[in-house]
Image 1 (cartoon, rainbow, N blue to C red):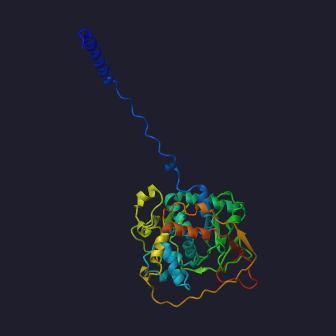
Image 2 (cartoon, rainbow, N blue to C red):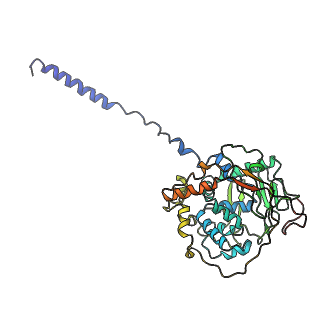
Image 3 (cartoon, helix red, strand yellow):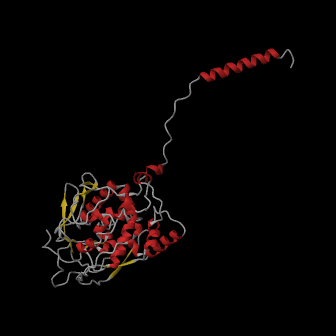
Length: 394
C-alpha cells in the first residue's frame, strides 16, 4: 500500500469503530405483542347451525331423559355395546332391562338407556350423530343448553309446546322445563323437527330426522305434532340426571337408585363430570378437551365396533330371566311423505379415519342419504288408549 494512503485507511477504520460502538449503545426496541392465533383457534367446535341441526329431534324430550341421553352420547363405544345387548334381548325394557345389565361395565347413563330400546338402537344406527352430539356436550355444554332452550321457545311460539298427559311444561322465568307427569311411567315423544318449531331457519342445515317408531300414535289431547307410545314402567327416582338451567350445566341429583354405580367421578350429587375411563379409547374432539381428559390412541368408533361384534367375551351375560312381553299399540299406516335427507357433507365432520375406516363411514353415509319415508301418526283408535295415559292435558 502506498504510504500516502495509510493516513486515510487509519481514519476510515476509526470511523467504522466509532459507528459500531454507537450502534451497540442503542437499546433494542421493546417487544411487540405476541402474534395473534389463527382465526380457527378461537372458533367453537360446532357452529350454531350445527348445534340446531343435531339437537332438533331431541330438544323437546323430558329433561331427565334428555340429560342422560346427552351424558351417554359422550360414551359412544359403550352405546354400541348396549345396542348389541338390546338386540339380543328384545323382550326387556324399563327397570327389567336395566337390572339385567347390572354386571355390564358401562357408565350409568348408558345403562339407563337400555330401558328405552328404540333410543339405544337409534344412537347406534346413527353413530356419527351420536359422536358429534357427545363431542358438543364436552366442548360446548353451556351452548348446548342454550340451544335446547332456544328451540323450546320456538316450539312454544309456534303453539306446539304444551302440557299433556305424558309431559308437563313449566315456564321457569324464560326457561322451559319439561318434566314427566307420572314418575313411574316414562314416555319418549316423537315429533317432526321440520314442522314442530315452525319454518326451519337454516336452509343449508336441515335438522336431523328419523321416521316415527312403530306403535306411536297421535290422539285428542296431544300437542300438535307430537306422537307417543305406551309408557315405559320405571321405579320412582329412576333418573339421576337433571338440568341446572340457571348455571347452564348438567347435574347429578340422585345417587341412590338401583343402577347408579359411579366410577371415579359423580360420586355425590352435584355438577355432572365426564368419566374418561368410560370413553374406552375413542379420541376426543378439540385440543382443550384432549388436554383435559387425555389423548387416547385407538381406532374410531366404527372400527372398534367391527372388532368386538360377534364376540361374546365383550359382555357379561345376565342371569336367565323370563321374557317380558310388551303389548303392541295400534299400528299406524297413513299416507307417507318424503322428507329431505340430512346434509351429507357434514355427516362425518370431526371423525379422523383413513383407508378401510373411511370406506366404512362412506358406505354408511350413502345409505343414510336415502330419503326417509315417514309415516305420519294417525288419530288415536276409538277404543281405550294404551295403558299409561293420565287425565286430559292441563
